[in-house]
Length: 157
Image (tube, rainbow, N blue to C red):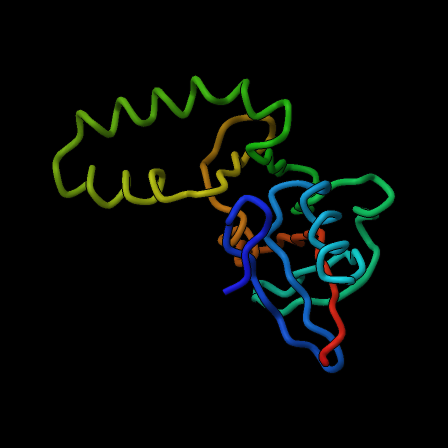
């Protein structure tokens, strides 16, 4: 298992002539990893509702120095835990957690499990209203979502 500078698990994809790593916690983290592995930064798109990476440049992550972006149409907005706007929704998340603690044990266990185990939380807004919390990994499987992540490409040796 590969990890980044912060010992966070990275996703590894073996393509025809390269190995691509994703899951970096920041653009800087990916840059450091690329230097360490003699790799190059690439933009990786997940656009088919599956975990099938496609190297491209649609979201211009490298130009913008971003590590994650989701395009799910005009009505949806995805706010990553590292985004400045995420803090605005922290109170809403705390209210949800408090409500869950008052719910029946079965419901509390199942729902709380999802929130508590979201290592890299993403707030999902629909029409500028809070809709849900998901993870970076789960966002790849959401209907109509095009997920873009910064990756590091390393030649297969």
